[in-house]
Structure formats: C-alpha cells, structure tokens
Image 1 (cartoon, rainbow over the protein chains, first blue to last red):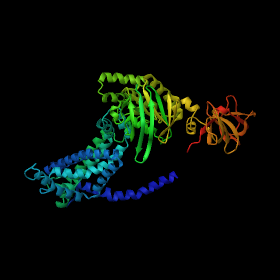
Image 2 (cartoon, rainbow over the protein chains, first blue to last red):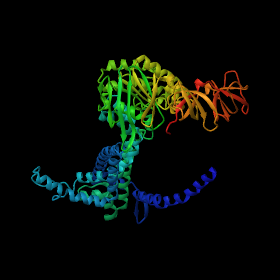
Image 3 (cartoon, each protein chain N blue to C red):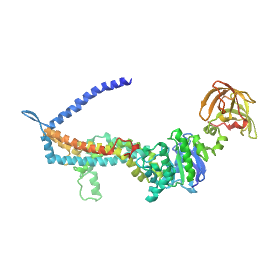
Image 4 (cartoon, rainbow over the protein chains, first blue to last red):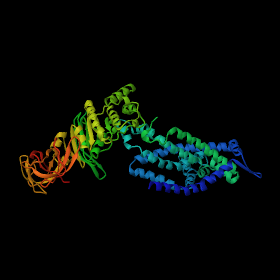
Length: 286
Length: 354
C-alpha cells in the first residue's frame, strides 16, 4: 500500500510541476532574462547595463533605502505589537482572547485599499485626529499627518500586525502556561516571568515571522501609493513606473532583482543566526 | 518548618464545584498525600495553597497567618510540577538560582546555596548542563532542588512521579522522602497512585468528588478503611455485596447477597442493612484440601507479579475472589481448590451511594 501511495505522489506531482513552471517559473525567468539583455535591431545581446543603471541612479538608491527602512520599521513594530496581542490571545480568558482574535480577523477581511482610505480619512488635515489636536490646543494648526513616510508605516503596520499575531499564537501556545507559574511561584513578578522566561524561549521562533513581514512589506504597492501621496517612493512604485509608464522592462526587471537580492541576503543572515527550526524544549543548546 | 491549616475551603469554577468545603491541618515537617481519582479536587487544593487559583470561600493559613488572598510570589512555597518545568534556556545552576535571584540574594551566597541544594539531590556535577541534556529523573531532582533552595514554608508536589517510568518512580519516591525528611519541610503531595501515597506519606487524605472521604496513616487506612471506596482505592481488594443479619460488639453475621451464603465478618454495621465486605487478597487462603468453614472454588487465572502471585478463584458462595498465592505453593489454572478467611479479616463496610 505504501508503495502505491508513493506512486500516487509521484504522478500527482506532475500536473503541479507543470502549472508551477507554466505560471510561475517561466514568466519569472522571462522577466529575469529581460534584466540581463537588450533588444536591438541586430538581435538580443547579453548586458549588465540595466544593473549599472539601477545602481547608479539616485532615484533607485533612495527608493531602496526607503523600502528597507519601511520594511524594517514595519517588521519590527508589527512583531512587537503582534507578539503582545498573540500573548493576550494565548493567555487571557477565552472571552478576551476570542474578542481580540475576532478583531484581528475582521481587519484581515477588509481590503488593503479600504484600510488605506480609512487612514486617509483619519489622518487628513481636516480629519478627526487633527481636529482633536487643534481642539485641545495641543497644536495651533493642523499637522501634516498624511502623505509621508510615517503615514505609510502606520498603514503597513496596521496591515501586518494581525498576520503576525495569527502566526505567533501557536508559538506562544506551545510554551506551557505552567512554566510562567513556576517562575511566579519562585517569587518572580508576572512581568519578570515574561521577560526572563517567556521572551528568551520564544524569540527565536518569533523572529522569522518578523522577517516574513519585512519581506512582505518590501514588495507592497497599494499602501505606499495611497498613504504616501507620491512622496514615499518605494521600490514597488519605481518598478511600476519603469514597466508601465516608461516601458523600460529591462530596468524594471533589474530593480526587482536588486530588491529580491537585498531582502534575500537579510533573510539568509537572520536564518543563519537563529536556528529557527529548533523546538523550544532544546533552547539554548550550543 | 511551618504548619498549614485549610479551613472550609471551597473552590468553584462557574457551576462546577471542584472542592466542596474541606478542612485539613498539616503539622510542620509532615508529608501529607492528597490521594484521589482525577476530578476529586486534589490538584485544585494544591493550586489554592500555592496561590495559583483563588478559592470561592474558606481560608488557608500558614503558622496561623491567613494567606488566602496573597499572590503566589510572596507565599514562599516551593512547587514541583508534574513535568518538572525547568526553564529550558537556563543551565541547571541558573534554574536553581532563579528563586534566589528573585529574592535579591547576593551572588556569592546564591551560588553557595544553589550548590548545596544540588548536592543534596546529587546533581552538583550537572550544574552547567541544560535541562534537555538531563534524563527525566535528573530533571525531577533539579526541580526539587529549585523548589527547596528558597527554603519554602511548604513544599507542594503535583504528581511529581507522573512523568517518570515505573522503575525510576520507586527510586524517586525513596529519594524525595529522604530529602524531605532531611530538610524537614512540610509537604503536600498530590497523587492518584495509591502505592506512591502509601510508600511516602506520614498521612494520606483520600479525596473524592471535592471532599475528604477519609484520612489517616497509610497502614491504618489500608488495614481499617472506613469506606469501600478507600478499601478499593488503596491496594487491591474484593468487595462482596452482603446483607447484615446480626451485629454485635464489632462482629457481624452477613449473608452474601447473590448466593445466600452466610459468614462472619468484622465491623459495626447495623443489622438489616445492605453492606460490602472487603476481602484483601493476602487474607484469602487457598488450599487444595478443605478445612472447617472453607468454600469450594476453581482457579480461573494465575497472575505472576515477581514478588508474589495472584489467583483469581471463582466460587459459588462468594463469587469471584482475588487471592494471594501462599509462598512455596503453586496452583494450576483450572484446579479445584478450597478458600477460607478469618472473620476478623473480612471487613464489613457501609454500601456507598455510588
């Protein structure tokens, strides 16, 4: 029977592989190919000129910096917020934990565009936040809250935090509740137990989730467009401009490859330093 | 070295009453087991004493001081959990030092006390190891050292042998008992293992459905249980349903309900009531020859346990009985035999509600 199962697996993988190649590998390869070629009347020639253009263009370099900054800020803040929320879900009474869970799911069901537009309303010059600040005489004139880096970061964090929370719940639930009880029984405060027992055991499993957030944020397009108001140039916007406005596919492809490469290197370094697949029980092993 | 008093303790989770008004006093240095099946409320009592749950009513006092509402941090109790719960990212030494660090004990004294505690459980050579590098038995000893190093007023143990295999269990029982005596710490042990409770305790408290059914020293509870539940829970026994015909001066004439066989038994149950007779296997003599008052039966199964051998004997007069094979004899399965017991060993116990 086991042999038959193995055969089914082998046969079953064929259509999957076919569609994977047709719909993913092939277009991607074609796109990558355009990043290292130029088409002239004489034919197609290999070149690194697109990469040279990317690396020498100030706009591309600044977009890369902005993207990395946005991704890292978003990753870090949503990791912290998501961790705290997941901790509440895992450790609070069933009612509280269900409420938090529902709130997170509800915001996941809303489209990113709707959420960004919601933030536009909130952060507008005549929006509720500015009205409140002016009304309380904290500021005399409305503050510029929209169309800047902070607005984009806030929007991104709003999108990523529920995802991080969902991913972290099993990580936290895997740790027995009694482990903190043991610490508390030995005289530790709840906070000390969290900091000296809970965090050190779970951070290695939490970090890769933060990393996924960094990677997901790096390629975001809608939120930077809608909340950045054209002033927050991230890589995704540059790529869209290059391919759909300037029709310079070689340059667009080279931009994408640079973005993927930079994120890939960061990811690799983090994975190297965390041994993230190791179960919590063997934490601290050399 | 403290006395623990539990007064009218009641613990309810919503509509479910886990502990229904128990009273218990534990003298200093005493090791008391809370013994009962799951759902008997024993763990709830332990958690309430440790401060991990708040009782609905009642009081818990240590040396006369009411600590019912104190948070666990300030109770100075040592707890050994079922799965030990060592901090996986800390060395054995750091695990043991944790409670001292929380008490701001200076570093040199901390080291010294941790080493002493580890010495006591023979784990000093493993101080630098991480928990995952230790066997279950070693982890348990570290957990014990971690609980004792803070010089707890009360030591609480929640099924401490639950995660150990049978062979280690016996060793661990002996060792924990030795250390507990040496330190002289007042201890509550929660267990569902009657053998463990009997081997380790000064006193056993039998719990059922949130209440204390019976308490006493192990041998006393074993020999003179007052309820059929205790008789069955502590050790092995055969319970025979009987009707009490006459009762006088701690002796009864009873009639085995299914067969109508009449015999004498010990106990003070009012005549005319339905009751149970408890017959321990070691009190049932099995012989190939009949004797005065013996009843005929047939060996249907022989179970060899190493130290001793149990026989299941089917009789008409007393139903199916469990007996201990006398040393130096060997009965065959299927053999016709005669069983007998002394009236004082057959204990008449009230028929319980269940």
